[in-house]
Image 1 (tube, rainbow, N blue to C red):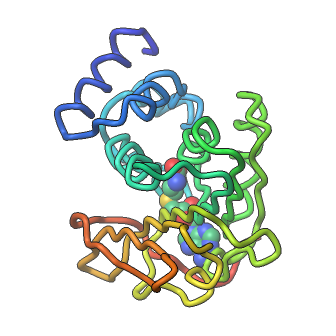
Image 2 (image 1 turned 30 degrees about the vertical axis):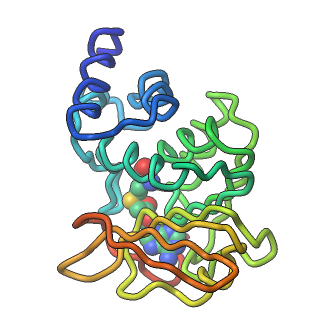
Image 3 (image 1 turned 60 degrees about the vertical axis):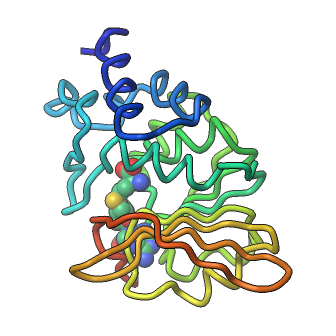
Length: 210
Ligand code: SAH
């Protein structure tokens, strides 16, 4: 299930789909995705598929995790990164191995608690989790030089834009039935937005669940 060959095959698939960042590919190879799933689904962990994590949420497919991470970090090393939608914690774990510090917000409390346990098991200590509505960002910890959102708002929340440092970058799916993945850079001159590809994420929902 977690044999080196299975993981190599997944990384090969990511390369075929156009992921090029070697550091990202290395972290995708070495991060145990099966630990972020229920035991009953763990045998599917190295398929390039989105998988359910309960509460009607999904662990994004490996391609999506790798692609978003590569977009965030391309020619753009990050010290402080805000993630919205901790979910299983897998994307959080990938980020934590590539940036200085990760601040991750999840609105569903039981998911946050599980993710915390998993990140502890992996001894990833540069991660701070919070149970809150991530649409509001995390103003006390901002500004951030990276913001990555794994749930899609209809429009980019002003609060998130306001917490993006000058020189900072946000990777975010935006839209309703039709979504697109956007890369937003804040420069001295202002905001620059690039549409990268179409996307399908769970919606960003306001409020929290205990
Ligand atoms: N990155 C996660 C993906 C989980 S799916 C993973 O790799 O497993 C998206 C997550 O965003 C869900 O857990 C959902 O509960 C969360 N979410 C949705 N709206 C949110 C909000 N406003 N604030 C924080 N988290 C939110």
